Image 1 (cartoon, chains in turn purple, orange):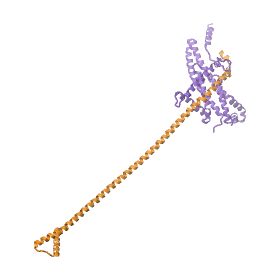
Image 2 (image 1 turned 180 degrees about the vertical axis):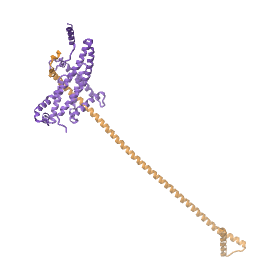
Image 3 (image 1 turned 135 degrees about the vertical axis):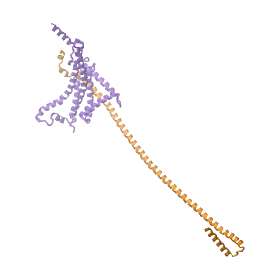
Image 4 (image 1 turned 90 degrees about the horizontal axis):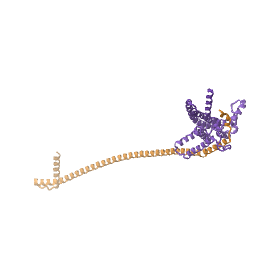
Length: 269
Length: 176
């Protein structure tokens, strides 16, 4: 009897423990519900992030001077990082020059959108619905097909990708379809899903830590408060880790975009 | 755990129309912003900065070149001036010694001339004195002799030969 009672108490308190779930990524729309223009929490975060990005970088560019201040210096450092350490590193400066604006746009936007995941009040990355990463990936996809047509020529590109040299002919039966799936689907899909899944996982871990902290420190019995301290510390560390992941994923996305585009060009002599 | 059951995981990856719309709109806005404004602005700043730095370097090189040229010119002028000064000094020294030598030779020759003139005039005066002495001494001697002898020597030849021998005697006495 007592056992059943305590179990019931435990169950009722557990019900207060808000476990973050994938529903966080499918919130209900609160404006224009049911229309193609519906805005839910994540879209709102994305819109705010966009406005902030346009304002901050817009004002920075507007006020940009020949002799940079600290903030302008930091922004210029980012721009040079994208140009030299991502684009030129992968493609070389001659081929890469025309892709610098595209990769810079992708990197900066993903970086800002990802950071939203750890900004209090937003608490979710603006890249945390599937279509935003998909559009970035589609951009890369379109660019590497265009590059294939212009660079190697479409036939040469397909031959190099589907029927690579130095492979025994029977293997082509397996290899060619796999390669075709790779260049048509896997490359853009992996780009989009990697980014999306990272943002989702990051949010789930951080949200879990802090909702556990809330549960242990406030809603549960005092005896469990010690766990709350541990979960809070872990949540804190994971928040810092999320900041790192936000930058890392922007870097990985931009670098892989360059790699895929570069694969459409003939080998450098 | 109930909440997980409500939504299938695959739903996350199924695109919603509004998600497509807002993602596309935002991507286009951001891309236009970066392509049309942000990146060209910074590119122009980078270009301007590079031009300014290159210009500064070129200007510094130009100034260096000018300074080098000026230094070279100054140095060559200085060495020219040195050579010229040395030449002038040498010339002056040579001229001075010349002048001194001239002056000395002129003085010497003048001195010699003066000496010569003096000697000549002394000699001529001596000669004159001698001649006049000869005449006068003859007359005086003759007169003395006439008076002493009390005789009048009328013959001019005798007279003169007597005077000559007298003078010779005087000369001999003088020489002795």
